[in-house]
Picture 1 (cartoon, rainbow, N blue to C red):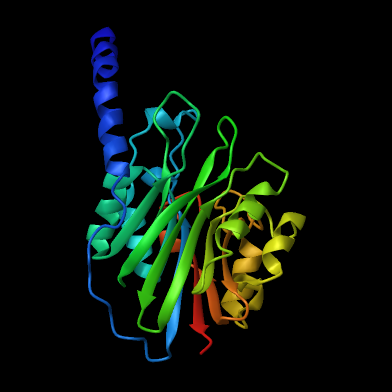
Picture 2 (cartoon, rainbow, N blue to C red):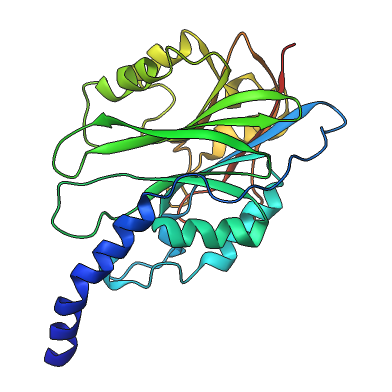
Length: 284
């Protein structure tokens, strides 16, 4: 046991260096665009994959669990959603993002969440798409020990039009609403149609969402389908029914919301969150 501990201590700086070098890589792969869907729609997914750990809990110590052990189930779940744009949260670094993207033959971008901890930077957020990702950037939306968070913004050329996708994993502790304000500031200059995707760690009735709802639509509420009502009622957190904390917000003036749903039960054990899927259509 002591020998292993010493080996880990010596290897830690090298592992951290590799992770940080990998994090500098932004857009990966150049898969060509796909044909437009027959109904001119785009399918969007938000999915917190919990580092590919499934629902395993080793006394709450995430560092003692094998990150990515359940990644095949995550990949199967994403594939089942058949989405054009996927926002993933809690991705264990560029190598895991690349493994998912390669398995699905998709392009991807990645951004670390950042942390003030002396340990590894935990996880990040990624955006995947079979369509060309023409640019991307990260932006900080909150600070504080354990609560420093970055979002990733990507400009994607879909066959139905160009969109700006923002993938978010908001801290669960800060209550001041500055994270939401900072997200809106980051997209002020965006000219493309905007989609906000992510695990926001707030419930639908949280007053902080009011700032989003001035220009964006909560797709679960807007979709005129039975599956959307079921998603609203069930929520997106596996261990707590009626806890909806994962969202896709579409720019109200730019999109029609056609459908919204959760992945079926056979895919819900892949993480402690249930993948949320939306179908939207750009307003020409």
